[in-house]
Length: 199
Image 1 (cartoon, rainbow, N blue to C red):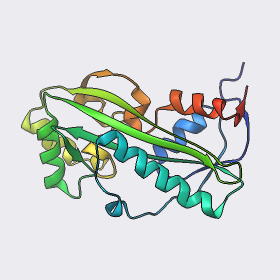
Image 2: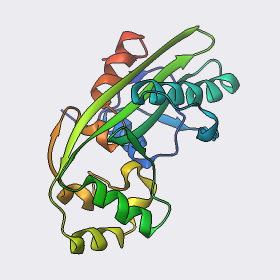
Image 3: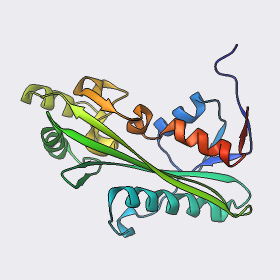
């Protein structure tokens, strides 16, 4: 059996430029069109983490679905939360060092919201998934070394669990792929529920 065999499915657009989300979905056997949704996330009101990522994913998916109403669109957003503080993507080395210091030897939550919708079919499902992540106790040397790599700067929370940053993580509870950027099990379940993919 070929593990990379494609699944039969309706046309799907991923409303994200995240290479990690694209890779996760392609690994699951999907063929995607990429149309990044360039909404201004600063215009979305802050709320509880679960509602916030759901709102962002819905807005991103709807933005693309308006121009491609016959296609299924997947929108997603991921945030890292520690002490009720949302950690975005670090803008520079100093922010990266501060985030890693704040996360060291502590548990934090990763929330991903995803929306799958099609305007023509008048169908839309939005969900949010939470994963708890425990960091090891990081030495100043480890923090500065990791901040000097290119990895932290395009990732919420300033680390990549699927890359060099794997050494930071002592334990996770919940979906691993959710921390990478998309809870692939739940996304595939939803695609099946909507009749988009057929095995």
